[in-house]
Image 1 (cartoon, rainbow, N blue to C red):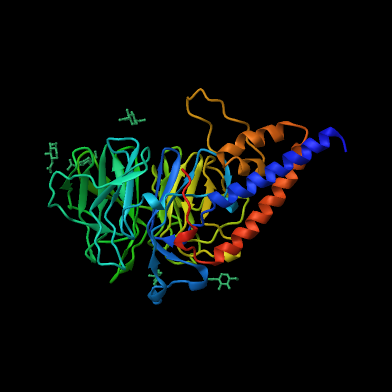
Image 2: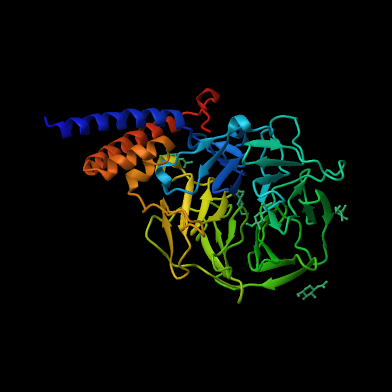
Length: 435
Ligand SMILES: *[C@@H]1O[C@H](CO)[C@@H](O)[C@H](O)[C@H]1NC(C)=O
Ligand SMILES: *[C@@H]1O[C@H](CO)[C@@H](O)[C@H](O)[C@H]1NC(C)=O
Ligand SMILES: *[C@@H]1O[C@H](CO)[C@@H](O)[C@H](O)[C@H]1NC(C)=O
Ligand SMILES: *[C@@H]1O[C@H](CO)[C@@H](O)[C@H](O)[C@H]1NC(C)=O
Ligand SMILES: *[C@@H]1O[C@H](CO)[C@@H](O)[C@H](O)[C@H]1NC(C)=O
């Protein structure tokens, strides 16, 4: 054996040991959930709360006995490429001070850029009540209960979508103590006080509607559900003007989606269209639609490649880089290789693309050069910090081909292993913190 092959072998050995060790310490398996919050801040996507389930104990409205909440709190680092098949979430559960809850809403954009807010929601299993507002500081990894100007103010909503604009969180509709509402509560996150907006011409009371800010001034609201009425038609678009606190209605036309609730809405990258996905009925004829904000015409966008995912509902969607990032929700089955996260590349309006591979968009104006897009196995390895350098060294050398195949084998083994673990409900003892 030549000296070179010996070095190669020991490097591979180190690689395997470090990799397997690091896998074990970072491993964190999130439970499937819906009615959670997903917040994108500091290039991290934080997931909190919701009702948990497992495909073997599938929950329907009639089968509430299986419903549970859990205490998991975790994030994913969105500054690095990843594959939705092999996501390494980072556990933050030990920093969580909030009682288990569902259907809260979260927003970024308050006075402190490192902080996001959680408003409302309800706790199910315990009588212990949650506070009205919580704040999470991503720099100190700590939750706090912000002091409100009016300490007695306590209108707590759930099953709504908070929309942030100029430091104000617009909290329309949803449920207040189980009663549907249609008032526009405005939470000034700078002054920490609440006002109520206009209800003239406001949409009828509803929950689990879709909402999105556009033209940096208007909020579009549509769909949703009222228990006695059912799902609302999607043709009626209710527009709230944040400048003059007024409502107008727009009739939309075209290929209008069927009535639905529990879908997600994001603003397209060009700001000229809304993209919606899913809805409460698992077998909707179509899950993905686009609403043109100039003409108010709906259409089904052309999508290329990838497997068209099944509609899900009560999930969340965030725009991160070039992607609509859909997290968790109801209506998917990991046993059928459907992943917790769906990625729709929305960079090309003529053809969106379902994909498993996330690539962070080019850096804004920072001077740090982006490394070339790593191959599928090397980006996976780079997710654990210390290993990055080692992987770089290995790949940079003549061993790259061999290490890549090892990488694939490990990846495969890890994935198999993970699939197996996934069947089991994680116990608190399995949780580990990486920070
Ligand atoms: C927060 O971010 C915005 C936009 O990047 C910036 O204009 C503002 O100065 C930041 N505020 C603080 C307190 O850092
Ligand atoms: C909220 O606080 C600001 C700043 O103190 C004040 O100007 C405003 O009137 C307050 N609004 C309410 C509804 O209390
Ligand atoms: C608010 O602005 C819209 C659009 O500029 C206008 O149509 C509407 O009349 C205004 N409403 C009020 C109450 O000022
Ligand atoms: C979804 O909507 C349909 C139509 O209103 C309704 O029959 C069904 O119960 C809803 N499903 C869930 C899970 O909310
Ligand atoms: C998920 O898929 C597995 C395997 O096909 C099946 O046994 C299970 O019933 C599915 N769960 C749901 C909720 O459809």
